[in-house]
Structure formats: structure tokens, C-alpha cells
Image (cartoon, rainbow, N blue to C red; front, top):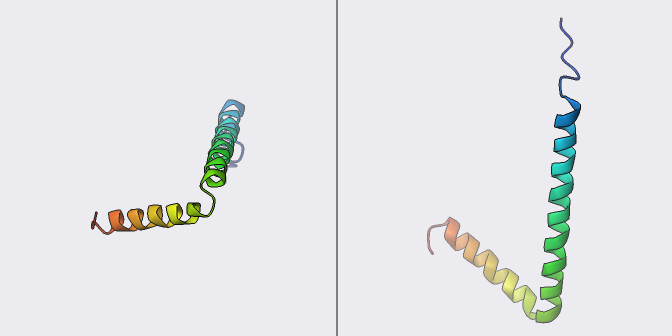
Length: 64
């Protein structure tokens, strides 16, 4: 039986790690932006979230 472990090259693994780091940075930026918007809107941010959720559900049900 042939051993197939270690078939990925170092460059491929580096690209995967760098891609994951880029995704993490984008998520951190989105979180910071949403946090600042939530701070501006205050208690109305929950209503905005609910409205977005309702719009997504309506879109998925083809009611929009």
C-alpha cells in the first residue's frame, strides 16, 4: 500500500494559511464596522438585524 501523506507542497500550504489569515482580517474589519454602526444606532440595531433577517427569509421563500 502506497503512502500518500505529505503530498501538498509547502507553497500550497502557505497559500492556504495566508488565505485563512486574509479571511480572518476581513472578518475583524466587518466586526469593527458593524460594532461602530451598532454603537451609532443603539437599541435600534436589534430592529435592523430583525429586518435584515426577515428580508432574507422572504427572499428565500420567493415572497420578495
